Amino acid sequence: MHVGGIMATWTDLPDSVLLEIFSYLPVRDRIRLSRVCHRWKRLVNDRWLWRHVDLTLYKMRPKVMWHLLRRYMASRLHSLRLGGFLLSGSQAPQLSPALMRALGQKCPNLKRLCLHVADLSTVPISSLPSTLKILELHSCEISMAWLLKGQDPTVLPQLECIVLDRVPAFRDEHLQGLTRFRALRSLVLGGTYRVTETGLDASLQELTYLQRLEVLGCTLSADSILRAISRHLRDVRKIRLTVRGLSATGLSVLEGMPALENLCLLGPLITPEMPSPAEIVSSCLTMPKLKVLELQGLGWEGQEAERTLCKGLPHCLVIVRACPKESMDWWM
Image 1 (spheres, rainbow, N blue to C red):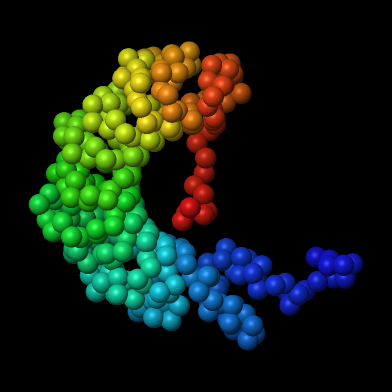
Image 2 (cartoon, helix red, strand yellow):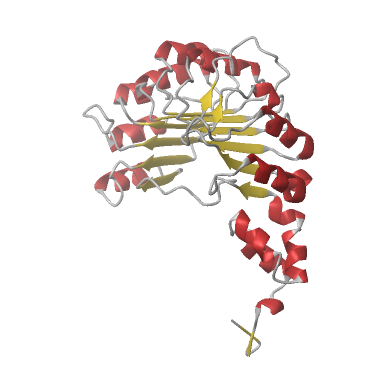
């Protein structure tokens, strides 16, 4: 790198640039950088660098986790991504209620917690940090009592978004229990195969304040999901679902949805009943606030179908693409 015709070195870079570079490194490498020089040690201790922490790359022993919590994270932490030991055998360490409570006590600014492959069957939901606004569970085990209706309504009072991705124990009773989170505005269900059409309809009847709903890879048909949405979520702004069981008739129930701004349909399961591009355009034209129509993994990119959608919906941003890879910026 050259600055003013002179070869620049690491020492010439301002702190802000070095911090940006360090933020892309795994936690272990960040800590190692503190041994390089006094300046880098100071930067590694900068609050900005520890706002978002991803520990899923490691099988983190509780002792190490406690050290990180005390030494680096504390009040600096805003987002934490943490992996468990669910697939490591019965003798492997598990996330504990004490650790969850410590997160709440020592990290008062923690807003987002993502747990991956964790056994939470012995961790009561009441032990989670009360400051959370976003809770994500990916391939986790939960106890039957975790989200049941009628439990303490003061738990997670600020929770605005919950993601339940491949949580095998999650069922209708848990879905109905989400109604106690009065601040909840976004719900993502992925691979929750125990949820039924009846359970979804009954729950959405009480979750009328949801503004975003995603139902991905479940056993429910897209038509049944859209019928429940049209009956109960008249103020929903974003819908994202897989197209399994989607028909032109099912899509038409969204016609006239007054607040819908973003509609995303995901493949790759395309059935003969799948609405044609022209039928999709016809339904979307009746949605007064629709701004974004996204179709992923349908194989329509660069095809006549994409041109039909773009031409028929000039007021919308039409995105037709293959299913994207997961972003590295998981906290966004």
